[in-house]
Amino acid sequence: MQLCYNDDGDERMNRKIYNDLLAWKKKKDKKPLMILGARQVGKTYIIDQFCKNEYEHYISINLFEDTKVVELYESSLNSDEKLVQLKVLLEFDFEKENTILFIDEIQESEKLISELKYFCEKHSNMQIICAGSLLGVRLKRFRASFPVGKVSMLTMYPMDFEEFLWAMNQQLLIDVIKNCYKNNIPLSAPVHEKALNLYQIYHITGGMPESIKNMVSVQNDIINYDTTILENIIDSYFKDMDKYVTSNSETLKIERVYRSIPSQLANESKKFQYSKIHQGAKARQYDTSLDWLEASNMILKSNLVSSPKIPLKGFVKEETFKLFLNDVGILNRLLEIKQQDILSDSLSLYKGAITENYVATQLKSSGYSLYYFKSNGKMKIDFLLYTKDGIIPVEVKAGEATQSKSLNIYQEKYHPNYCIRISRKNFGFDKRKNIKSVPLYAVFCIKEEIEKN
Image 1 (cartoon, rainbow, N blue to C red):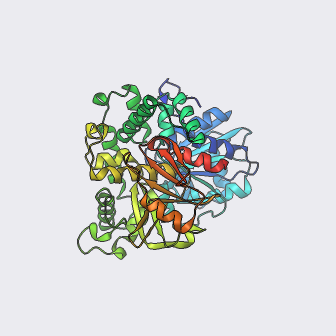
Image 2 (cartoon, helix red, strand yellow; image 1 turned 135 degrees about the vertical axis):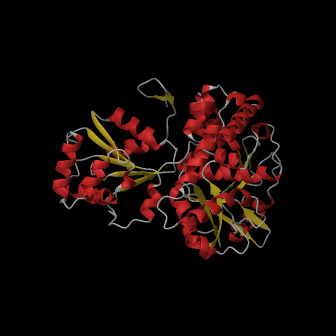
Image 3 (spheres, rainbow, N blue to C red; image 1 turned 90 degrees about the vertical axis):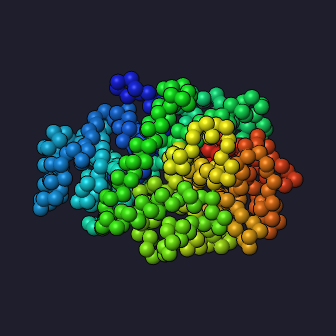
């Protein structure tokens, strides 16, 4: 894949979701497409690039700016009349062949979201993509009639480590990593070390496109990397927390839950505890706040299962779960970890918690639902992957020490096809223990191999 460039020559990173957009375009009976995702993950940019590259005629509207469109859809006109007047307002016929309409910040008009059903049923020749900040939150609290079954949806996440390597112009390294993963052969020591170094830089930037773009521009010079980029994104997250809420007290609760997550990642209990938000806090006080954060895609939820059996969702224990932040760079900034401590691997207790958060983001961006398992304090499995090979247990280690007591117990009891151990250790496969060793920088490969098996 090649890097994308916009009209002024500014280099940006390519994204895997582009292939999903192409697949949507190829469908004969397309529904309007809605892209969900947290603020600053790159939704607007990649949709704009897709529309420019793949269509002859393209128009975009931003409902923050085009308030007349919002007013039009608040009017009492019928759907046919609104469509005619929308064309007049925009001076654009988006029913022409090879034409697409991109509606950004669509959460500003519930009536227009409801109207997507009309577009789907009465004007299926129209090609429409929608996106917006906190769109997921708005949909959770939708008061109008949502067009169920008439809209396709995709969720976009921060750039995963492979996308980060694309941005760093490391395609040759990606190819070698994928080959070693597939064949269970180790990288040479120097290349393995290079990949681990890039993995540590990713912990500094995280997956936010603007952050990675800045690191590319300074050629991995940590001293000149602009840390205010992530700080500004975090500030925008906190400012967002008073949107689409019922009261100031709800805003405060959302912020309290979010701020508690970094400190809870190292919980010995291996679960999110409401009592850690503040003394005496109860689940019923914060359920709505947790729903808001999930819908915003600012956090990831991993559910405990009572038994590692198919289907995992059927064995979820709703009251017990872990929460992760959607981006490891944001996590490290919230924890106020110095860049040098990341590069020198000096994080002691929190190294394991941060590494597990990183793996959660990579698995989620690959399309996996997040589950974990523990049993009687003797066995703790960090992630369970529901695949066509059955349930595959995944253990995460932050360092090179790879004793896998939990995996050994799990294998004896549940007999999986194989196990995965993610660590700083090189590639390999222990046939005696039936454990596949995956380096931390190669988590993005897991989906690819499981799908091919």
